[in-house]
Image (tube, rainbow, N blue to C red; front, side):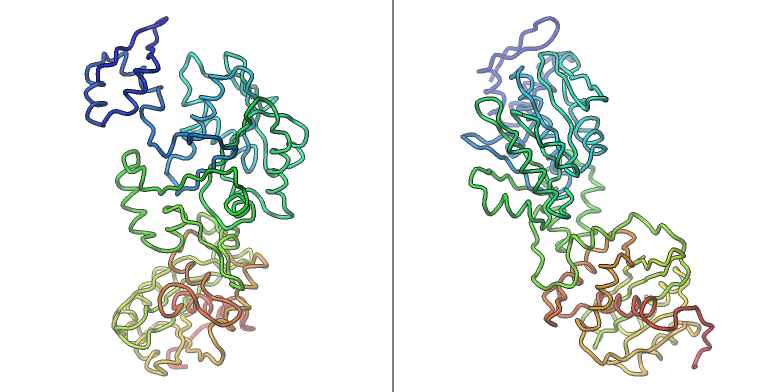
Length: 455
């Protein structure tokens, strides 16, 4: 393969047949081709997306109306969407493109100005100018793209378009059918040109709009992929951290693997509910901190659930840490509880004593004589105990200060019917959380107390 690029007005050009040769070449042949280029030509060739893109990032062949890229974070969805818009605009001066995101701020920050946004991926001589007052991009050849918020469905009622790029559609606000209304208004206005098309890029979530596209849209072509498909372009430390943190958890399978994890009918917690309750870190100082402990029945049995929760000065409870340990002896999990208590300056440790009775308290005090331990006995099933705590989440009285994948997988496996369908044999982490939040928010003794060992 020896394609011969030529220059036009200082820019490198390829004959279409030569470009196809490069696209279909092996990695070794591509590398050899690049080595033979001058530095100037090497800089120019980077704008030819079809050479560098993975097959999954290129638009499918054949007749389609909707192309849905359903993949994990870091897959390269945004770049694929932006490059499709760029190719459309550069080849069709009459293109009128809708750029739709969850809100206008994200549309500008991600779709236009982001690392893979349109302002970054277009060559300088073909870069569109942005008219902020009109929320509009205009390419040198006359093609146009306008930014819209899916949170304002009526803004899409009326404008006509020939193409559209919809980003993170699973993140669009579903309340009151707003996300589906935005999608429907967009489709109703997609009537310019001979073959209107929509590209939708998103990480999966179990929301009505996404299920509708997957189940009922025969004109929709779906591309699936995971974060790790893009390893070559991701920092090694990031990839290693993601594998270590999330592994094969349900959250990892969804956010990294790109799987659509469906919520169980009757589940007390849903993925959408947990996302609504999430914040990067605790946004209010802790007024009281409690550690919930669900001890295993045996050293080689289930994990010991150890969950740290705090009641903030704003009256909202927060999950701060998951210090659970698996396959640990009583001495080891007791030391883990003691470490968490010291690290988070816990006011109380609430431990279930159904399995070990007073032995649980003895083991904990052996690890640290000063631990303020309160033993509790379960008189009803795990799901029944969890229901009032789930209601706290629904009421906005609990937040997760970070991501807790194994814990959240267990929460989503609990149902009102009493059947557990999450990972592992028992929801140890979820049960520990229930004990901690019950102590913080549902018990009548809501104020801190001074505890004397042995009392």
